Image (tube, rainbow, N blue to C red):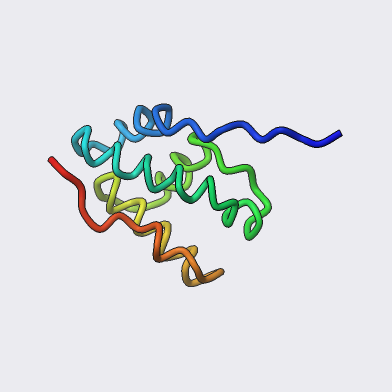
Length: 96
């Protein structure tokens, strides 16, 4: 029997990102990029870890400071260094 993968909950991530400040547009932009990364399956293949909103929030909490987008880009830079292929998921700008 095959396993059905649950769809990534971008709304749950956007809500979880409130702990890092930023405005709603920034949090939604990060959540969209995270959903794209989840859809690619790249992180789960590289890290062998389920990619969930909760996991993302924990990873971003490791950043010493910054807004949701700054923390997301910090984490993606580390993944780019470790595995390659993550630069396309960085947040470049968001509408305020």
